[in-house]
Length: 139
Image (tube, rainbow, N blue to C red):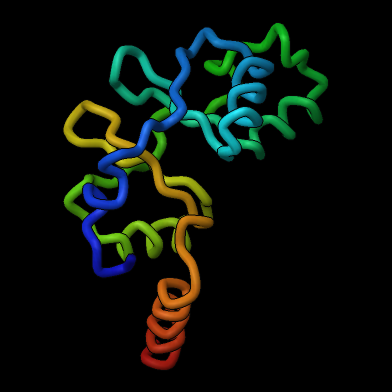
């Protein structure tokens, strides 16, 4: 998968999207139904944020009501994105370097899809580990 362009990986993907005024409860229900770990928060087809399982836990820990809290209050606004022309290894590197598990794929202003760290198995992770070890030896 690391040698493939992200556009190829997500060409048949139907990412979970919700509007900023959708509730945390609805987001969690949809995430559970679709068995995904993130919701892309959009206005039209423009990405305005991302809401993940970690955000859901934070919402509860802060004592907020999931039924009354809109995503706009607890989402990560203007998340980092990557273009569909990027290679899969570039997405994996970015997630590893920045410490997040989900990376939206955006083409111009339009949401194309999302990749998660869990999408990468075996050889991809081994390649990233090899690169990381190499850079640590050089530095």
